[in-house]
Length: 104
Image 1: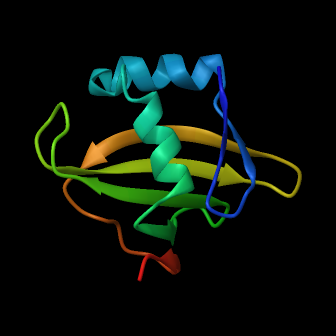
Image 2: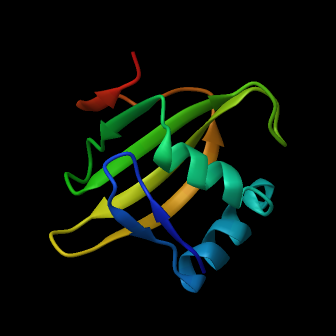
């Protein structure tokens, strides 16, 4: 699977296991690798998860998706020596949490 670069120039891994999980749970994500890359590199907002302080949620709004107008959310686990995608999905709303970065 590809590696991605995020807004902060960190390398983000996407493992085969996580990609399989995403495809099984969110089949609409099957052909969305370019949008995942775009959301990580040029998000509208990055929010810290309220349930996992090591997880950052990258959001970018898309007016047209496989499931209508939605935000793409890419959940990244950020450890001191590693960062990897946990899951990614389309959603209607940005979750609450500490805003780490916001597009102006």
